[in-house]
Structures are given as structure tokens and as C-alpha cells.
Length: 224
Image (tube, rainbow, N blue to C red):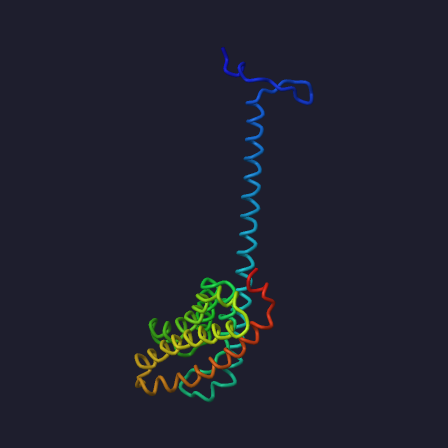
């Protein structure tokens, strides 16, 4: 005796017969197709998010490089031994606050790497890392506090912004000071004073600019 003979049959719309196993099989196929469709939608959504992330990183990297060039042209003559006020930190910080570490570190890495194309001070790989790559990448560490910045409001948000920028700028300064001591034959006191002046000014300008931008940008922009 066939097992299928024990399964009750149901009439279909055309007058034929389907047993319950046939219906279960059809339901299985529908479920499988639906799950594939959901996966496709999710993958498509992920592609959209990835494309948007790449686009924004590219735009903010370009913006950072332009701001850095403009600020450098204005202030480079003040510091004769290299270094200048930089505004490239602003786009890096905004990307860090929006996308977290992946946004901040990626933008910082791109800014620092592309800066090498027009730099005249490339000696060794460690010196390049300390003078260009690390100082920009560490700014992206503000991404650690992305969620608190997004959720906080008013003075609390401002305090988080100031605190995070001060910390990453201190790390940036440490990298520049190390380079000054190891590769530019500068003493600790001179290196920290020389690099500290333009780093401190850059930090103050960036804090003010980021606070203004964070209040001006729609909250939805940082969370979508």
C-alpha cells in the first residue's frame, strides 16, 4: 500500500485532486521563494548602505583634503619647519560620529595616505606613518563615542564632542612629537612646543566647527 493513499485528497479549482503532501510541497516552494526574496531585499539594502558609505567617505575625504590644502596655504609660512593648521579633522570627525570607527578610521586613513602625493617630507616608512598616517587615523577614533554623541543633546553632547576631540588630538600630537624627536633631531620640549602650537589651534577651530555642524545637521542624518 502506498503511503500517499493514506493522505486525504482535496479538490483544486480545476476539478483535479491534490493531496495534503502536494499542498505542503507547494507551501514549501512558496516559503522558499519568499525567503529568497527577503534575502535579496536585505542584500540589496546592504548594497545600498555600502554604496552610500563609500560615497560619503569619498566626499568627506575630498572635503578634508581641500580644507587641509586651504588651511595649509594660509598658515604654512608661520611654521617654517613643516606642519600647519589643519581642518581635515572636521570631515574625519563627522564621519566618525555618523558611522563609528569604520567611518572615522577609513576617512582618516584615506586623508593621510592621499596627503603623501604632494608632501615633500618623506624619509622613511616609520616617519611617514608618524607624520601623516597615524595623525589622521587617530582622529577617527572619535567613532568610539558615535552612539553617545548621536543620542545626547545640548550641553551633554557638547561635552562629549569636546572630550573626544581633545583626546584624539592629544594622540595626534604624540605621534607628531615622536616623529620630531626620532627623525627631525628635535628635543622633546621643542618638538612638543612646535607641534603643539598648530595642533592646539587646529583643535580649537575643529571643536568650534564640529559643535556648530552637529547642531545644524538634522539628527536623522547621523542615525540613518
